Image (cartoon, rainbow, N blue to C red; front, side):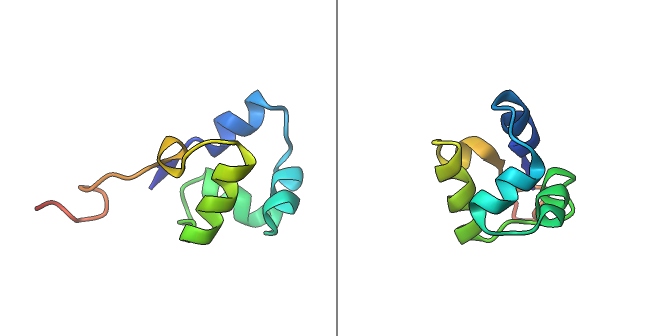
Length: 71
């Protein structure tokens, strides 16, 4: 799953550590999210969306093909 976390974080001049602290995860989790190596739980996605004052769908790009959910 792709996301816009790094782009949003840089726009707001927020460090990975600051974002991690704000959403109660480790800096490594933020790094993994930004690199696409970790998928956020719904709770974490919600916290990140609240932090950036956006909708989850505006930050996380859900690709049906990538998730093998083509119908």
